[in-house]
Image 1 (cartoon, rainbow, N blue to C red):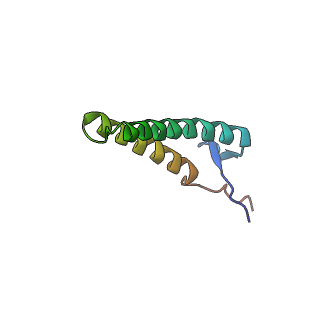
Image 2: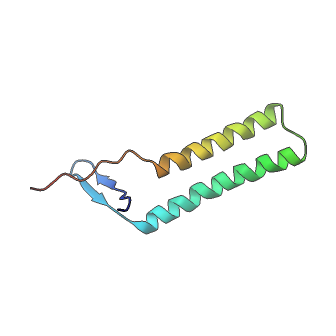
Image 3: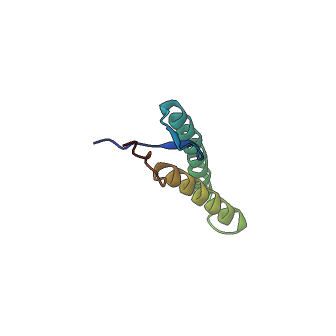
Amino acid sequence: MGMTRYIRLDLSQGEYMEDIDDFRFRCHELLVELDAANTKMMMMVVSKRVSGPDWDEEVKKHHEAYKAWNSFLHPVTVPPDDQH
């Protein structure tokens, strides 16, 4: 049993679309952001800059990147209406 992602195109018409290329593109965008945030924080740890306003800003950026990724992977889905 696989996970189905429904993307609502037009709320008024109740149309849905599943597009793997759009999904992959958005995954890539979000993972690039998360990777950049991870890399920046790792560089700061290595350079012993783990406190202060710069650190706090990077922690916030990392948190937001992770939150965006997690929200994308676990969206609130609405299945298409049954047409019986």
